[in-house]
Length: 458
Ligand SMILES: Cc1cc2nc3c(=O)[nH]c(=O)nc-3n(C[C@H](O)[C@H](O)[C@H](O)COP(=O)(O)OP(=O)(O)OC[C@H]3O[C@@H](n4cnc5c(N)ncnc54)[C@H](O)[C@@H]3O)c2cc1C
Image (cartoon, rainbow, N blue to C red; front, side, top):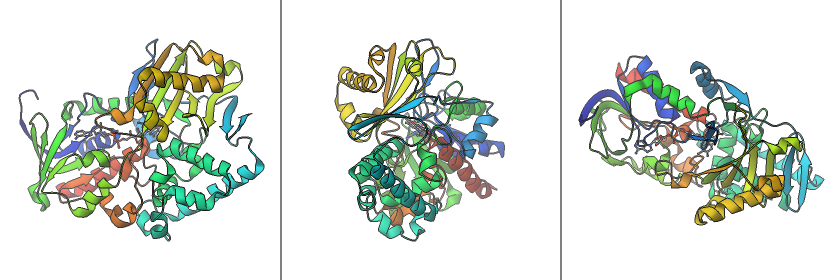
């Protein structure tokens, strides 16, 4: 490819995350000539393997998969990858308000009033989520009413106790990496519905955190890219997309280095806020532009802390800990498959990521270790390695885990999320109808966009 400044293909795909790579694979298997342009010097986007002191891979981005994530699980099987369960034996630690408990199973030991409040709030959220069709949430029975309010407003009206509201703030941070007051209640209901309920979202066993991929989850993208070979071009950030409203005339996509790719169709497989940074000529229809202006990303700093061994297991602890008041609100055992060391993974999410990113690295690390010592005792004080990634600092992610919609977005502009514009098609986990925001949703969107394009090429 060196020296070539112009190229023609049937379909050009912007972004080599799971969505873009799955779309490329499907299209190529149907005999389509495809080129994937990836801004970074690697594939995988929000999936990235780091390295532990002994060389074992450790995920610094997306990692878990779970039951009902059929697209992700099928992909993993097809690529010849294997999964293994997240460690969860022993007691979990819960710090809710002023109380601290050790518990097994799903339900922490809490004040019965708070527990009942959490139960009824979850029941109502699940019930609303079931009414919100994941394909067109803007048509749900109470869509307008839900989309007029933030998730925080809905929670304040629904949860009766301070403990219940604090619990759902923690859940919002853990699931959406943003705060309830940032997000539309309709988006929250859509997202919960797309996962099949709140339990599948927050549970380890039986939920989205159940399994890990041997070799690290980025292997999904690495194996896909291996299959695609030179049809994936790295270090090719797309700056401009020229298109014609009549689909037959196609697109011209330009990268920062000046490479021009002409194609009959283009797939934009990047998160909405990143799509908003590409210059489209002519400009996109107002609905599409307004939509991406209203879909910011959450914010997360993911931290893996490695120890000689998983010492918490010897104390009968699972490594799973949650707190409504610590910045490191969620922690899990992330010991690698080869067991070469013990690893705890923790997340600074939403407002805690805001604050964490303003600290200098030493201060942030001290804060994280302080919380781990608070959960697991003094043995947490001296790690072998401390590996962190602030996803808001990533030029081609600009935040994580994914984008969400602010109030008024879905009901006013929702249909523009997936609706093609002339020869332009939209993929990425945010466009999924099941498990939006997850690897599974990214894979679904890749398949969907390929199915959308293939009939148009014949
Ligand atoms: C810390 C963290 C933890 C997570 N945990 C989980 C988890 O446990 N389970 C789970 O299922 N999901 C998890 N996720 C979410 C999951 O990683 C994503 O849903 C999924 O990887 C999204 O894939 P995608 O292809 O839609 O988007 P992306 O992975 O964002 O891919 C988009 C690609 O487009 C590229 N790009 C952007 N702009 C341009 C441009 N202008 N030109 C060319 N290329 C461009 C990017 O570099 C990127 O490679 C997590 C994410 C993070 C960050």
